[in-house]
Amino acid sequence: MEVLGGNDIRLLESGAQYFPALLAAIAEARSEVHLETYIYEADATGERITAALIDAVKRGIAVRVMVDGFGGRSFVRDTALRLLDAGVEVMIFRREIAALNMRRHRLRRLHRKLVVVDARLAFVGGINIIDDMNTPAQIPPRFDYAVRIEGPLLSEIHQAALSLWMRLRWADFHHRPDEQPRLQPVTRSVGTRRAAFVVRDNLRHRRDIEVAYLDAIEQARHEVILANAYFLPGWRFRRALMDAAARGVKVTLLLQGRVEYWLLHHACRALYPTLLDAGVRIIEYRLSFLHAKVAVVDQDWATVGSSNIDPFSLMLAREANVVVRDIGFTTELRVSLQRAMAEGGENLTRKRWRRQPFFVRGLSWAAYGLVRLLIGVAGYARERPER
Image 1: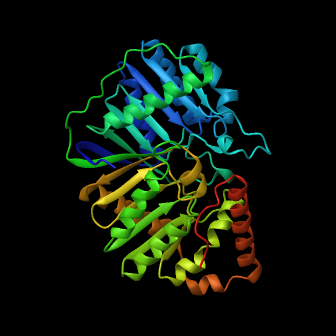
Image 2: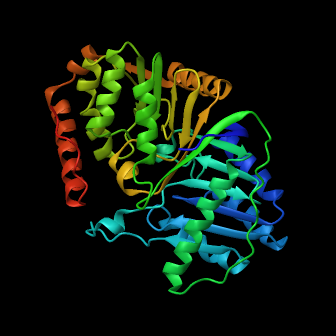
Image 3: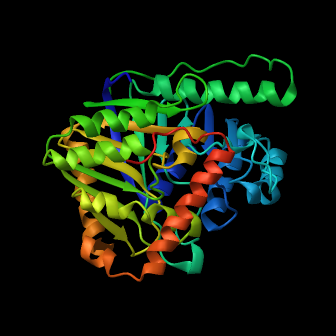
């Protein structure tokens, strides 16, 4: 993981801050816009993004959109043809999975959320193209983060976006695509923040994001705050958190308190007793749906990205995170997370957990067992057994 200095990196909290910044960047584009996302809905926010992309094409901008075939099922049905007709280049990353198709390659999804404009400005985070209010039962609004980036880090981000696009074009059309003029990333120093771009794929970067987390947690001396929507880590990750707590590090997990995906929600809760007994603090976010995938460690380590801490993100999906080594950025993210915990968090203690009916706890273990079984069927059950 190469940390580069000289970047301007700005934290964006949820769609209320992210989408205006994204729309402004598209409106100011002069050469190209590249957008990757897992979900692209035709709701109010999706329609604004679609209109902005079509307008960019009319101005002569090269626009490329890549959407996952499973997460973006509605995009394929509702929006893809409109963009194609308008002159946008559209690629679908692996078509929708058949209901019983558990073959490993079909489960590898494009889960990263990444936008590059003119090779000079990028957005990376966990926010899909979907309205914050577009939630089950219309519970407002989902809670998430992204970052806006300028500076030397653009070289790696732009290259990652371009490489995947070219590889997918070749795979879809079975011939080498015509070489297109490539913009040179604008990588001059524009700020003071040091950062690294970390991806997970199925080639050379299978564990890079997980290793970045583990290295930071294992070196923590004072505090770890981890906010994650889908938290189902393997044994080594759990051990790192428990060891940190044993060293006297204040370890806090801000996790999903509302049920969005029943199986994952209850499987995650099966891990609570062991973590609570080890001194890890667990807070469930109940104000709305938590979709964040961020963490802060001590004073100068933070990450914002698309990767959950679960088997899907850590072993199957293409993900992208930014690791920021900057006291000011870490402080800003920590304050935001502390505010979220104070306003929408519910502290789950060992005593409260044990007061739950036995069948509720049993349900969590049944869900956990089923998830582990599904991971095994997919060929990924290789973690060290529980001790």
